Length: 113
Length: 113
Image (cartoon, rainbow over all chains, first blue to last red):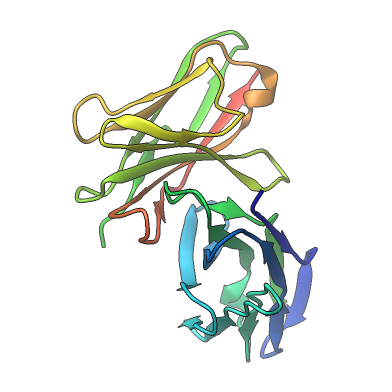
């Protein structure tokens, strides 16, 4: 079945460092891909999305490109801030026709001043 | 911006008791979902609901679980006889269409004693 694999955390960076969180997926057909972020004590918020190959999703300085040839959707940010500290989830909406999301295990990012 | 709201934020229940988790989706949304996240694990799909019926459910969603939309605004998840392993964070989500991004509530933390 469909699945998502994320890099293990936690990831600890200094402010202004470059961020990459790896995400790869397995799916039949052409899934839509998402990154969600969860700040402490809050629910999941959509960060960005891409719906077809080579699409680039972007928001708040974060970017991810839908790479069909490598089945990847890596999250990047050029310069992280302390306020970016959160848990990041990669997800896909795949072969199901109900729109259900399949999530990766989440990656905790801690940014230190 | 419209939000998905969930109540209560924390529910503590004795094993074997029934529990109802409540959600108010965004008003013009048509697709509704429940997910759960056991501490330290990934977010897992439980059930999707459209047009007043279940459209898909996971293996987790056994006969102890039920969902309903009793009054056109609330969307509830009932667990009939809770078990220790039901302890988790439960998230409600809604979307305008199955191809549109899902909006999540802040979750209900369910603790079974």
